[in-house]
Length: 212
Image (tube, rainbow, N blue to C red; front, side, top):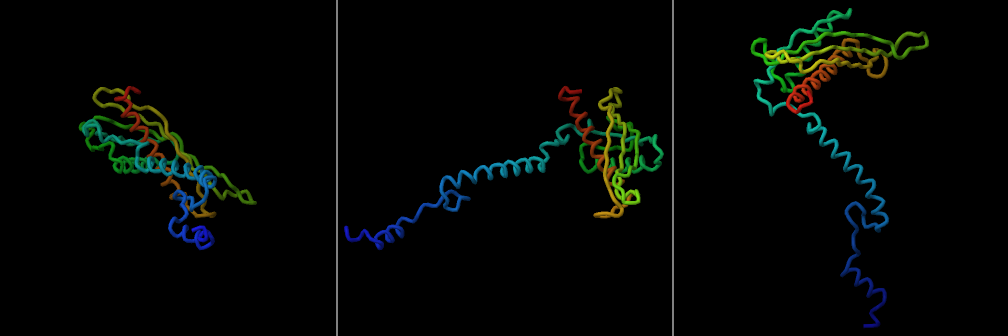
């Protein structure tokens, strides 16, 4: 047997007992290499976990656990104290679409059938130049809108929400992905409607968890 401990002998041992393979992701590397891989692996796992939570809606809970009758809402037409006369009409339509899509509140056409009422006023609408060419002509703009909103319980008159919301977007009719002011305003009002809806949901939940 002592004569077998040559190259053929060690080749035979390797065929019977193949070298150990490292953990998955290390590709057979030694412990030092694996330790260097783990710090890169953990942040990726955490990032994917956070993304899963956000996409699953856990950070932005809905109101489905509350009785539907308590979530009935009459949406009053917004007023407008700015010089842009069409903004409140578009915001009313956009906010209605936002509320319908989320299904947190049930919009009714009869105010007597609604437990909640939402009022609002557009207080700001402004267009400002942000980037200019060599002749001082604007090439990029910012649209800014602000609104004052109030939601109350119609039976008791108690105010559940009284706040101001705003939104802003940038656009350019000439650079990058060209966009008209009308298209940018649609984006702007969708963003404002989303902000208003989130405040409404938070205020509604607040009357049950003691934050109101």
